[in-house]
Amino acid sequence: MTRVLHILDHSLPLHSGYAFRTRAIMKAQLADGLEVRGVTGLRHTAEAPAEPDPQLAEGLLFHRTAGTISGPTGMREWREISALADRIERLLDEWRPDILHAHSPALCGLAALRIARRHQLPLVYEIRAFWEDAAVGNLTGREGSLKYRLTRSLENRVVEGADAVMTICRGLREDLIRRGFPEGKIGIMPNGVDLSLFGNPPPRDDALARELGLGEGPVIGFIGSFYDYEGLDDLIAAMPGLIASRPDARLLMVGGGPMADNLRRQAEASPAADAIHFVGRVPHEEVERYYSLCDVMAYPRKASRLTELVTPLKPLEAMAQGRLVAASDVGGHRELIDDGITGTLFAPDDPADCARALAGLLARRGEWDTIRDAAREAVASRHDWARNVRRYRDVYQALLTSGAKGRIRAAA
Image 1 (cartoon, rainbow, N blue to C red):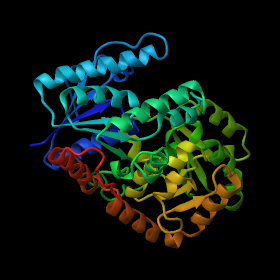
Image 2 (tube, helix red, strand yellow):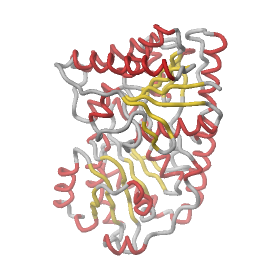
Image 3 (cartoon, rainbow, N blue to C red):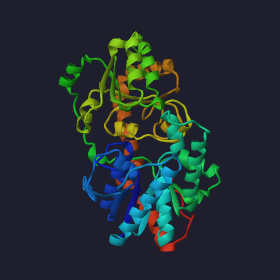
């Protein structure tokens, strides 16, 4: 049985899109007959209470790197890499993996690359986002800065050294090819969902709707993290225009993040303030109740390198749950949504067009079932983990049987 060690920034029991993608991959691989474990770097333990090592979370085994992060920028990151590499090294003594599968950021990839070379193990590197662009999107970095260029340089180093590279979408793959890396080395493992988790959509939770004061009209929803690049200020700015044509429409905002206070202040000052409802963060097990209240899930991401190159997970989850999806027309959304067929696209950074698109979708109620069915079918055919995870098996098998670097045919 092939053994795969996933090398990670963080994992369950922390809840994030990163952790949920890892969970989906590892569970699908277990079901596909592989033996899998994960090992996390120092940033996991820095963000969570002390945990056992190894730790069993939702049936998956994770090993931890102990210690703390210290030192000036640059030295601190190299210490992180060394600590994670040492933990992987010790793990090899007790559990000899056949494949090292590192996941971005580049710190994980560099630690894995050090061990892969030392022990002549195949290395697959998976890029979920370019972290220098994510930092710009989160307002913690600046495009073109020294840190930005250093992060990109480290990413390039891992891509060059890995035996195969997987990205989550075409945008990331094409960017790497423009940097000069060979096409045949870079495949795609798209974001996906575990369809076994999504049965029939739950009925509307009328008691919760009354508690929140949503009324009987259509509800536009956003459930997730409140980052600047998500464009939630544009969604709030669109509400007066939407209310002008649909006075009974409501906006439900579930979650939190760096922009939460600014967004609340904007909503309070809006002419449509009474139609905008903030809930804050809710326990993961309660999220489905809030989805049940939403007729349309809105994803108004701003246009940027991050949103043009990276596909988000949330629209796929919404489509799998039978929700209508309206999203800004950026590259990451265009890879997931066929405008007018599986969802609705509108111009990014344009509240007026957002309002127009939402009003148009609400007016087409007779087409909702057709759109929902088409969206769920698209998820099932292109984004079901049970099916897509086989792409990894093909990559692993090619590396194990031929040992050929840079000859992994890119998955479509």
